[in-house]
Image (cartoon, rainbow, N blue to C red; front, side, top):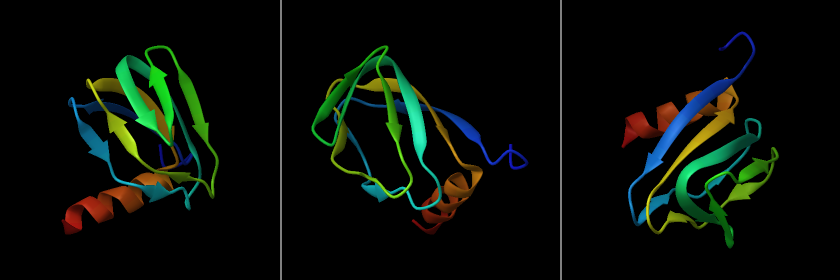
Length: 89
């Protein structure tokens, strides 16, 4: 919803998948792990766990050892930056 500057994503990570390190420079994000687990910044999140990453923070070392599904909310601005980055690869 570009009008409210919000995007809601369902993210599925395969076992062993690594999410690229990134700076939250276009707003923060927040999410809930629905299934499995993911380790980010040295913290292990499992099904039912919630996280919040404020603007200006970094997500680093995000890996899902056994696979995971999560719902993540971020700004539409941040999502556009990710889409442009993915299109270049």
